[in-house]
Image (cartoon, rainbow, N blue to C red; front, side, top):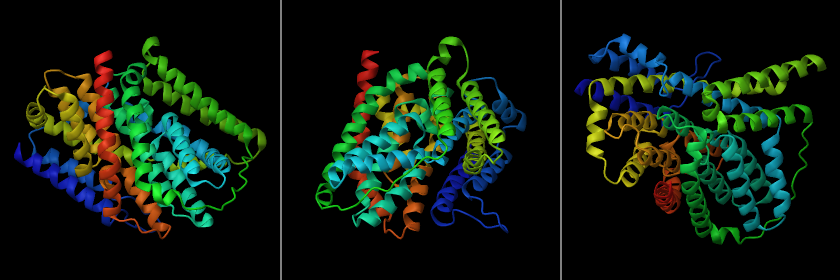
Length: 436
């Protein structure tokens, strides 16, 4: 038991160090991320030093169960593709600019509109895509308006990682934890609505208190004109996302797995876009950009982390952790534990680990523990930069804009916003579990 645990711990530590200090390696013209390469090596070594045979790992990877990581990855990637496609067409930039126009010269009004816009979009798309899309726009706008971008960057990041709890598609951790426990789209919403609302309101209030002084400063800026040239493709993209979301909501009632719904939606989008491009006799630029930006690196990352967790479960480690956490006060214990664990090993590995821990307990898949862990995986993302890959990407974009925002600056927001938001969400979960 000891050897696999040591290898897994070393892998997580090296992975975090790689994310922080040497995120990419250059091989000729290719510059792949390093974190998933490290986890692959760690997974191989973990299997080699354990008593778990390759056949056991292979069966876990292809098992026809809800915890099958391949199904979960298909669901996540296909939903991400639908969101990226809209971003390639300029949809998110258009909405961000519309919020700016409504705010005019008032910073507090702009702050509110930005928070609402990011929150709504995150609910129906993906927090990672929203962060990648809005962060450069906010930096660009603030520079031209000669105002401090930090309040808006913080509002964007906090909103994206708070309201991502609302639907199962908002965060890959939601997808993994919920589908691994057999929770459908509709059931997920039943238990997520109160935690998300409570967390969203508390997070906004905490942000307003934190940046109140900065938001009183005058602002003089004009919104740029953003025109979406390819309106047909835009409506095709919006229609596919809308239909897919509705189908996901009723999938459990019609007996269709969610990954099949999202995969069909992504496939249909590709077909429609290709037909339109052929009819126009030009390249499908949005589709090409979408394929280039898809987060393929998450595939080896999630699979390698899953393999390590399979080994830990096989040697009895996850059962020991589950026994330590116990069955009493699951909302508080799993919520707080997953929150801090996300900031030790990142929220995706944490979700894979905690999913296995929950499955190993007597309660099998206790609803309180599952949703408390989902809350920790989302809110934990804005406690420190390593809480989620989104935090690393966000910090990287800010650094490229020559903005100074270090670890302590991030932690300041984490302490003043993340902690009260966490307990507000856990309180909402307690209410939901009590009612339902």
